[in-house]
Amino acid sequence: MMMLKQGLFLLLFISTLLNASTMFTLSGIKKVYPVVEIYGKKIPQSYKSMVFEELKEVTDDLKIDTKGHDQRSLAVLINEQNVDNKTVINIQLLIGEEVKRLDSDGKIFAITYQSKGYFLLESEDELEDKFEDTLDTLLSKFSDQYKEENKSYTKVTTDDKNFAQNLGYEINCDEAVKKTKKLQKNIMLV
Image (cartoon, rainbow, N blue to C red; front, top):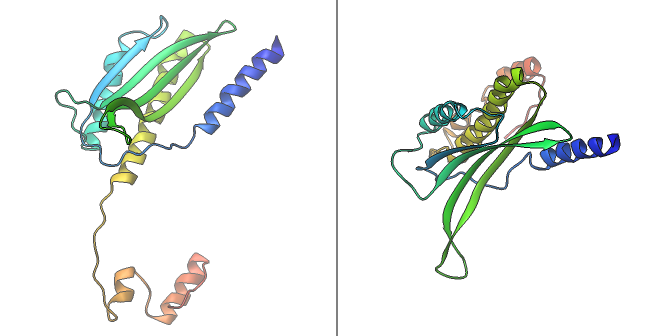
């Protein structure tokens, strides 16, 4: 029985490692419809409003419109599972939307972003802290990826005379040597 428990926890750990990076993209998302669902008896329904508030903070920070309805949903799904008399709380952050099929004009509903977090609930006293930590991790990961994929680039026009300055290169050899010694880096001549 102990081997089964260890096997299950090892499987959960490996699953987490494999899901550490995402194949999903968040570029171009400007509007979503927020959804929060809680399934289970150990998680109070009052957490729903807390999750909505945190979701609203993140979407406002990212300038994602959440007013009204939209065909794209940003959902936080929370459920619990019992494994060997222990409770595992799962939190998923998803984006679901209608997408056009490549082979036809038909549309289907698809998950276009997914991130998961979970924790083992050992006592009721730690529920709120572990819940908030897991949710914060998911929202932070989402926010970082969104910012990275939606950052704007500015076009810089340069010529022979201001090339080095525009790229932040050092044009004084003595200054470059001083900087490299201080930063313990190599010099590259262009």
